[in-house]
Image: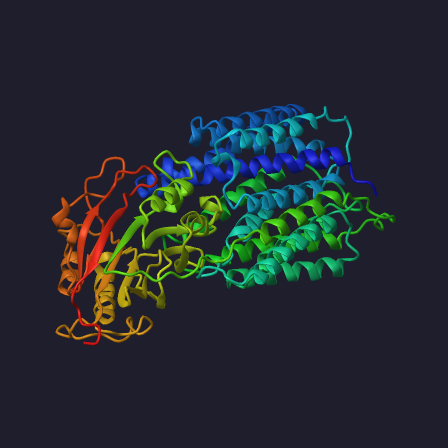
Length: 623
């Protein structure tokens, strides 16, 4: 069986461009249209849904026109995004253009090319995204990214051909499952739990990345093969659901197995002995709606109580894919054709080589460096997933600014390490490499969203204490750290309060216990008396969502914490484009004093950072 390479590669490159656009469209909804919570979620959802519904107008056009027009519009929007033109609206139009292109493909791409084109496109997009360290070309300036984008667009357009009058089309089910496949692969590819501390074991990263490359190869190869029997499809379907369940439980490396098995299942729905069926274009657009609804319900769980864990959304989608694929496998009209599948091994072999080289080039964690003297510099910054006021990814700019301050400790809030909704990048690893610092991640909402501490100072203890939800769905935590400055212990409580009225007393108790000499892992469970002596100076810092005049601040002050920024002009920190109130804080117990404090005007987030230089005073470490 020979796979038509031209249509398969065209479909794959079209999917790569569409996924590029999606990784701009989704975070732009939050940062530009939604402005991080200022826009009602219902309005934001209606706006997003419109661009997935508009493609249904393609039903009024001829498939040939949809294919060519959608492809041309997709390329135009991708080039405009590279130029930074009207990011939100151009990306929105690009989503519609990509779905219109897929509508045309559903009527014109030969059956045998579809599984390889779909899984090849999804896999290629994932591999390129990983090779770029999660920072896609659209976020990069300079000549090289432009040349790469233009080359991809030119290759894509060169493969467009006027469709033939009659073509053996893939079944409607195959095209419908493209939407669920995009959801599962998009979330699983980057949403797996990352190391909570700077990775130091290179061989583990090598094994994990090598497994990823191998499974991607398997996905393409399996997608090119007709299934051996319905039992084979049933087994693959059961494994797909099992891997999805394990992924929701944060099992390591399961995501890549999920992607591989998804490709094998998708191939079964397009096997040559299954009838083509009717209306594949409607099916692919319907699958796009499944992608949209599944994605937004999955991430809506962080802002509203759904009554069930959001991981069940992914499991339900996996069950849908498996059930429909197995049902399809039971409908066999003739034996599958004999003969080997011809498939070029060069592209997957190159992917394996590139991923391996990137892994081998991964630097080890920076060394621990003790600091002499009694002063240290601390930055507390809510980075809003790394997106600046202009909606563009600003991780490198954040890292460059922070590095220029020569900090000893950096505390970050709203750290995203892989949400598809925010583009699927690892904020923490990127910023840490730019700073040359070790990191300690504290999951809050889930395993890839939370807060982080970066430092090269000796860290003696680190522990994350979950805070009560207090009817606010998004999780919060208090990262409790004991480190050394000049041979003396300093406690750090790094947090991002979501419900300050209920959570402020909790972090106040943690700070008091840490200051009384409790270990980091005990501070959340072993309360200190109100009059207990301060044995260890403590910093409580982060986005507290609390103004200096709010009752929650009085709770923190009653725990022995002072607000040094009032003596340095009381600078506001939010919103960054027109700061009016200070909700980001660096609070101190006895034994610490602020030498300097400021909130520099930076456009890299919707918050301003708090930059302080602190000095240890005469607290007796022995009590």
